[in-house]
Length: 180
Image 1 (cartoon, rainbow, N blue to C red):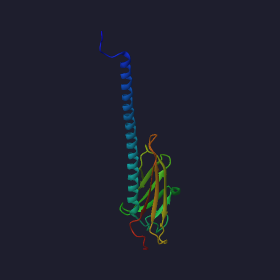
Image 2 (image 1 turned 120 degrees about the horizontal axis):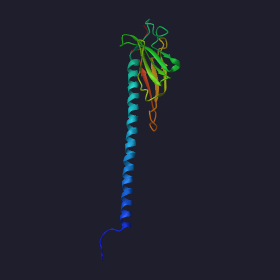
Image 3 (image 1 turned 90 degrees about the vertical axis):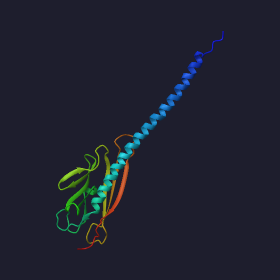
Image 4 (image 1 turned 90 degrees about the horizontal axis):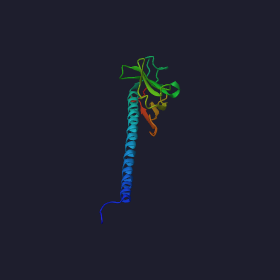
């Protein structure tokens, strides 16, 4: 009698082929989910560093000269480097002529913002700042150079596999550096 059906070997081969196909599809899906997770974490770091760069740039562009407010060490200065090159102090003309400072806190690995005696974090503790430095040219009244601040910020992602993000920005003071 000729029964039509599958033999045990045919059934095992079919299950093995189906298992290989399903395993490949699941592996591709898992790899895609991991890459999406890393992309979202990188985007979060980019958003954070872009915010910091924009916030600092806006404040630094609006700086004014030290004319006796008691913020900077000398009259006529526009900016002053602090904390061994890891900070910058200035007077913000739009913020009621407040003495302000951006600086790196090595204990918490964050960039901080100081205004009216209050210190606020402007970077997340979850994404540690690896380095922050400030370079200043034209800060003096007598140098006849428009003040320019270049700051560099490197941030590491909170998890392995997320690359570090580095941003460097140069900002020029909005007001001309004219003698008064």
